[in-house]
Length: 97
Image (cartoon, rainbow, N blue to C red; front, side, top):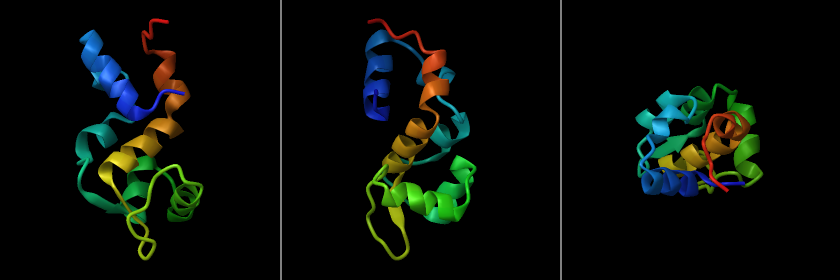
């Protein structure tokens, strides 16, 4: 499975606009890689409940900065969203093997 950072690197190398493939696009455009986000923010971006987001974070899909309140960086939010929508993103992505 390709990671979000690998995806972005590949797009840059191939001259592709990543926002043509990423979904939901607003998450990837609005979220600042270096900012810190709590579960309520992440839940809004991922269109999930707070509880579902906490479960995702506890499974290790995003690295936490703090446990109380659950907080992670924007880059980690993007990684988690990318993983959550991976099959939809890659369906339309022209990946050369």
